Length: 109
Image (cartoon, rainbow, N blue to C red):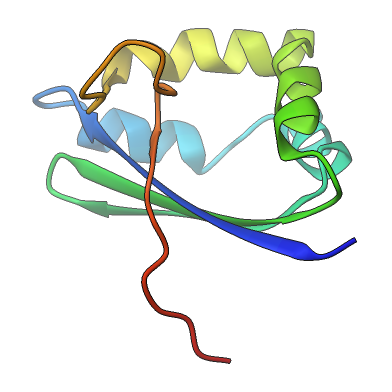
């Protein structure tokens, strides 16, 4: 089991930055538990104006399966229903995730 680093981006709706940050100051504990159960660690979201960048490390063997399981979690779905309307996807084609994954071009420990 290795570590997979994931970076992704999404936009914010105009004027949604303060509310998005307010909500993330108090992420519900069941949502945080679902993130941990999915093997996700070091999960960080950065904001620049209306652009969000997320980074996390997946400690597991099947990221897609772990994310799918997290997506079946009721608390997580409720959370996504709250924050989703504040986001604007940057997908360039159908079938891409809501948060568009980025290609890692450099890493140094």
